[in-house]
Length: 531
Picture 1 (cartoon, rainbow, N blue to C red):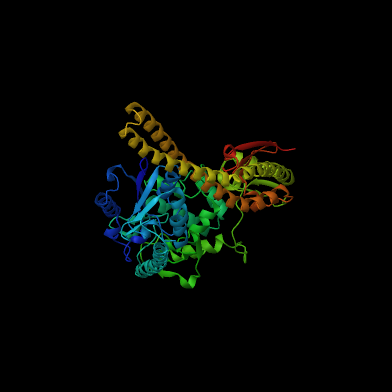
Picture 2 (picture 1 turned 90 degrees about the vertical axis):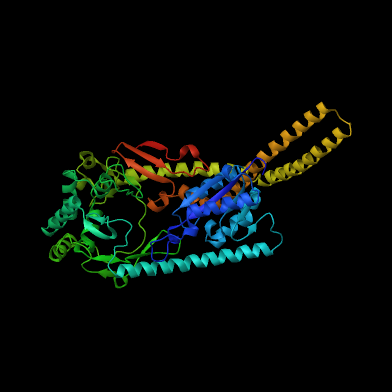
């Protein structure tokens, strides 16, 4: 602890709102947690609160640990910068009792980190035997149950407000803005509303979705995302492409959206589980639909006619499931390549609507392109397998590292005892003042080296264990890829980020190799000439 910092961890989640979704509990606010923890540090003499490292996750759920500040704190802990972590209570640290227990019972003890939960009156330094561990486990289970119960209450309260016609979405749909005087009410966005009406009118006149998208792209009408950014709204797409285009999917989604009829529709989807980001579609019978909650942009007649014309050729009974990630990409618009109607060549899927001349030129023989990608993938899988075998031999040295840690800890104890004996020797005139000073400095210097080195070694052990677990999953994938004979996009996507197809002669493969094995290959482009 002499050369390490104390870390203050603070977390505030959107779930900490009252169930009416308006007021955050003052006791859980960032400021309140900070004051509580710093006051505890002063009362208990835990270093200088002003010099403590502070990590704040504001707006992040406790049901998972993929939080930016928490991850930074753990990186610093593995580097040996942190000797103690203090948080308000276990619910602030995390609400997943299994993962929380893993940190408190395995990772922190291995790193030699003391942890304190102020409101739970828990200090790992004072916890002896099983009673403390049982108490922590019980509280973590209760926190996990509370999180699930709170999620149900918040959803119920939100549903009640939606049933009153209040708009509960985080963002206003394209064509509308949130009323500055009442954020739960929509008002028309004049510029975007006109584009929405144009789309519905063209569809009602018999124009198909590709024609509408091409018209908007050729007219350089700002896309939804470009419009939001232009008017100063902080909107971001998960995988935002450099080249913004109106797409068939965007047009189709807008034509189906009943919000343009002046209706508020809520509960169309739900989270798969508490803490999960995956959304599951609800049956229409579960939707909450309220009429006349805001000004409509189109009439019911126009809406029905546009949908009748736009979706006449929709495929029925398409099997549900996640589509494989597209890997064959047009370098000019950033969209995926699709097969021609004959199925013998690939072309840009957006060539008909992008308005970009280069998109129309791309046409590559299917067999040649797929064989080239397969060949490169098999070669890369073989290279990675060789590297993995080499790494596994290094990872087998974990026991040697742990043995070294044990020796260093024993040496530190011996050196600490020597420091005391040196002073006794000096007071007893067995050594001179100069000898005492020199030997004391040498001993203290070595202790400092050990204190800095031990966390580094422990961090290596943790990383190696994580890598070994991860490798068990990856080895089967690599073996499968090395022998892959068919163009399986799902399997190829495990190692390929994208294949940029320029022409019959040139493609670029961007690998997404695990940086544990080939850090220099992550995002690296391999230029391939088709044979």
